[in-house]
Image 1 (cartoon, one colour):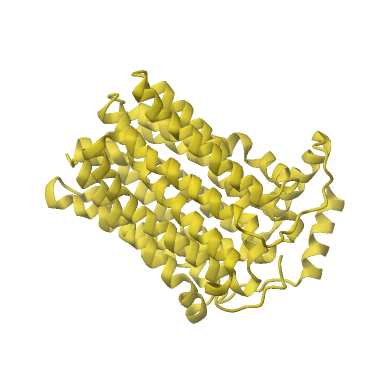
Image 2 (tube, one colour; image 1 turned 60 degrees about the vertical axis):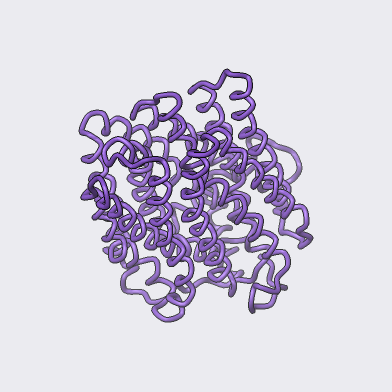
Length: 432
């Protein structure tokens, strides 16, 4: 962790500002693709509810297949360079869609392949990204830094879908994805300009399978043996599972049940994203006012209860209930994620940040493809509205995994010093 950076306003931290601006561009484009890809599959290729579920699963299955080894691999690489190449290759993958349209050969199978490639690259980008931030900011700045990144991510989620709806109406879905490819290139340029040295674990240059297996076990053991990280992981697993169920049927729900046109779908999802903006903005002041532990313990159950309104939406103006429900869920999730991520980055030893991040990603995000399949299956068997109800209730109830734990009695997380951290990981290594 880069302790040479003094606590203070991040606005004067050039490296963080470059990372922030690049991520803002990338998140903006990704928010557009989140709407464009499934909606294009429905409108142009006639994809069924189950096929949309499969498409959602394809974009996230990389975390289940490659999540664990990604941490050990990233520890051997320069994180900034890893993120840079992931951005470049994601831009290339997306560019294949308008090219296929020009050649008259775009198929649903092509979209599945692009989703798979994007998901694979996102695994390595996210693992590197989560363990790179502590190289640019001090521990005292982690919540502030994660809050700023979370706010712009939510802003992209708010603005992106609205732009996506307009672009689909004007130029079509495939061409809208061109913008996403450009944003990934902008992000890669921002990463090129960062000059702050980063911590790199002394794992050796060789990719020895036996050594990597040991490191993977250490990262997973640390995550599952840590009493607080284990609780947070269980909560995130549940939230992600039910969240993936909802995401897989969101477009069919808005388009087929609520009869919203493409433009209105973008507006509804965009308005819902404002909750995430608010969550990112209030996370740091809430942490100071109420306690760093409480911004993890209470938001999902208290603020997240607003999400229970979503299945009561009706065609016409009643579709705005989806926006209200999404806003509540987004606000709760962003505050929770910022608090949980900041704690993990502070408590983990620098030499294990990538492995612990990968372990958490594998445990938590590995449920996303399962949720996508479950959403498509339940949507076909129970009906789309009933599946929406299952999803939002499941997300809300997940918060009780943390609220009904010993964490509810804690105001602030107490993070150990570096000596305690290294002794903890040494004990895990000996046990392994």
